[in-house]
Amino acid sequence: MQKRFVSIWFRHLKTDWFTRRQSSLKTKPFALAQPDHGRMIITAVNPLALAKDVFPGMVVADARAIIHGIQIIDDQPTLADKLLKNLSLWCIRYTPIAAIDPPDGIILDATGCPHLWNGETAYISDITTRLKNFGYHVQAAISDTIGCSWAMSRFSKGNTIIKPGDHMNELLSMPPESLRFDPSSVERLHKLGLKHVKDFIGMPRQSLRRRFGDDFLKKLDQALGYEEEFIQPVEIIEPFNERLPSFEPIITLAGIETALHHLLDTICKKLSHEQKGLRAASLKCFMTDGKIETLEISTTHPTSNPQHLFKLFELKFNTINPEAGIEVFLLEAKKVEPIIPVQEKLWDTPEQSHNKNLAELLDRLTAKFGEGHIKRFAPDQHYWPERSYKIASDINEPVSAEWQTPRPRPLQLLEKPEPIEVTAPIPDYPPMNFRHKGTLHKIINADGPERIEQEWWLSDGEHRDYYYVEDEEGRRYWLFRLGHYDADKNYCWFLHGYFA
Image 1: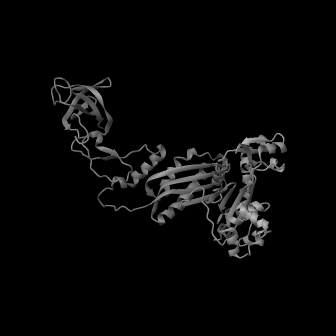
Image 2: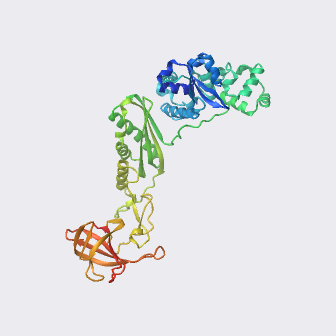
Image 3: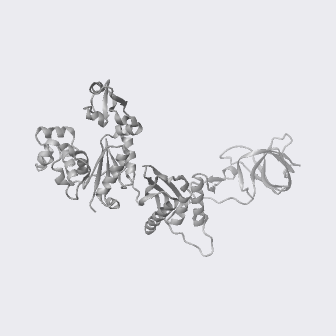
């Protein structure tokens, strides 16, 4: 497929942005300035100031002498980069590959994209018209090379569409500065009377290299297509992604659902073909007003089930406001993992961590309540109750120990034991009643004690005698006495957990 690149030049990038924010500036000449060696130097001007011979690089005092009352605004050094990044993200609706071209441009890899807009003419026209409606002065060009598109967008009048294979002929009449040579090389070319590309393009390469250097030839070869030029996309392109433009802006929930079903079916077929599953994905909705709405989901296990993935996205539809109209949908698989088939057994039930229904339930709960609300507890090799479990990092984390269940353990273990008041007859007998948070509980059934010692290699302290008790209302508790039962009452009672 023939490569096609678009170069977009924002002639007054920063001043246009200020004009968008303050409509009163549309009718006033103004400039941006910043200090330089004790003087205020103009860094950008709007078209009205430019028309009256005020240029970037001029001292503010001179500009005020030329235009009485010109408004001077403090420049923001990082403003251009921020604007270009945001505009590049906006351009992703036209192509997956959009890159910043400092200080005032954007490069688009439009290969295979213009046909979605019925051709390159409509493609370029749609881009520039909408950017102009936003308030930017832009010129754009499309050709086989980045260098040619860059030259045509800045040194040709209007939007330029260079036919495939015709970029060399178009460059012949361009000035040397159109090929992005360094200023010193451009100055020497003009001094030598070489005012157009055609004047030096046929010269021996050894002579050009000796006089202007290797970078000169590199720029020339890139513009002519002899050497490939690479760009750094503003967003990394995911290996698995699907794009769906809309013939008319989508403003209804039914339209969003239809688009998402189509995208998921397509991407899941590709994933299944490569025996891969999706672990994280994002759906980007590009609005006609320039905003981007994003929905993100994650899964417990890699999956290529489009129905399950749709349910996860569906839980977040209420965060989308489609009133402005969605013109492009982009589904990206942010994280993909191989799907490893699990050997199923005829009689045994599947392991919990590989249970498909459980994994999908966890995915839906996570999508609804957010990350971090659902935890998996795994056994740890300790006797002390607070140390006998740990929080697993993932549902798939292998278990290195088994739950110690020789005696009953509570369904809910308190993170910190709570003190209680207990009435007990004699040592080692279960308590008759206990008071917790002002409520008295009469014990009718009890079992114990079960003695659990401190792990001396971890910490020192008294042992615990645990009792399994049930009160008159049928509620069951896990109580313990810390220390020996003696006349000096050097012991304490605690509530440590609740049974089902």
